[in-house]
Image (tube, rainbow, N blue to C red; front, side):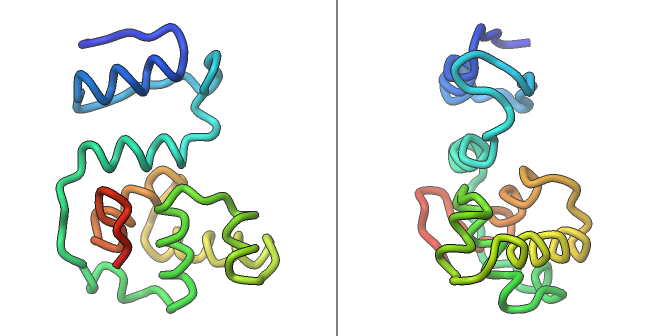
Length: 129
């Protein structure tokens, strides 16, 4: 163990400073908890994942719309924000997200964010491919 934080904001700051291999964060913490994690996950991934080239074979099973949803989730957007951007219903976004997660064998939104970075769809610093 390299650090311990009393609230979520401190946890994010410590993770950025200490650069641990694993961060364990309680789902309910003062100031910032594990629930709004996609934005936090995106910031942590940007700090730790080296830039990669686009891994198109990993994305091959996805439709163009699923790839777009993957990219937008990777930027930390909520389902509601994605729906507004794409001018579709939130239920449609959730359907595409569920399908892409099944196709890529992902079990959490955090894994979706990491996959967006690992495939090169999103790069550290926010540059989108």
